[in-house]
View 1 (cartoon, helix red, strand yellow):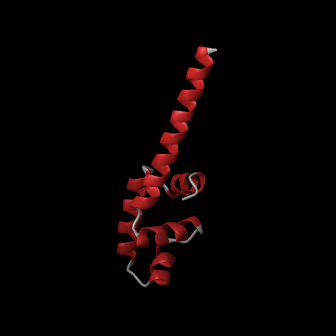
View 2: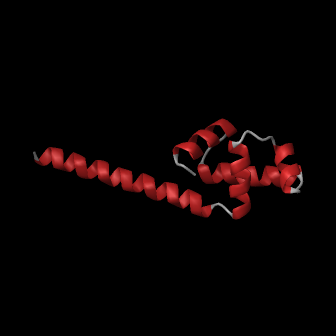
View 3: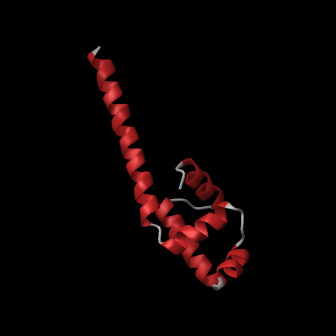
Length: 88
């Protein structure tokens, strides 16, 4: 019975840690990075994002690189999957 309680406490701690990491990622994105992330989730290309936000494609690339770093991913597919899982 003690072992079961210990496992339950460990699971609860892991869940709290995951929730904390999700909140940290969400709150560390700038307002512009959140806009870019929304558009990436919508399937927009860098060129489309640049046009919609009236910024250069290089600026979009910089935002995307920072978002990748903050989410610790290497591809848009990973980013979208992780963002949706965490309800970005």
